[in-house]
Length: 238
Image (cartoon, rainbow, N blue to C red; front, side, top):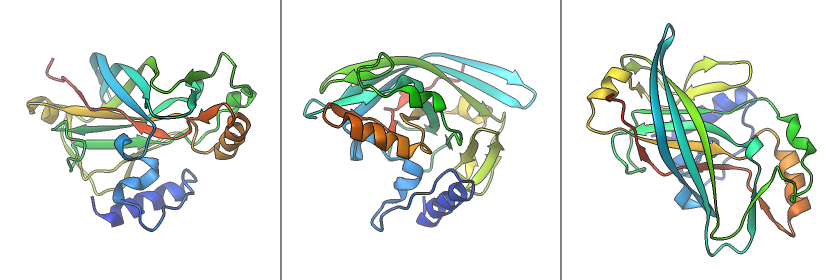
């Protein structure tokens, strides 16, 4: 994807009040909107497994409900505990491709949703020993089950990125790619692979996250950014 597209996306997000950060001069194109392959920078990995896929017809399009299990694993050589707050966790993006090679572009579809509302209920969490906080030791794992709804057109849709394809009171959904694959086109492919982008702390509660991190620094680190899951094969032929 060309760099001007990444800059345009950040401009769109900044204009909506969703993203106000600046990228360093040597950032790669992939460093848009806090989305990076997990291998490049993180102290933990996400492995996704699809448990069930349901395709439902709706007047506004096709709703694909993905039930999944995600395993969060901290690197063995990390010298500190990572704190995860499940209540803050959200799936904010999905990527579809014809190959499991995560470096492959262009994607069939890539979307991200950055919720623009704060979660005041998180402010009551002050102690890292709280039952609402999951400490994950180096080499340790934590697993969660959740679901994600992907809305598709029946047929392929052409657009010029970045395109705001749906606007809600609590979020803005952005399609990054020129080509948005429809359900019928996806079903004709030999394979479709998907990845999930999971945000572990609200992007617009950075100050509160920094406060918790400073408070818990002697005991570990609060996980506050996004991680990208491993690719998982998606069967839409049923």
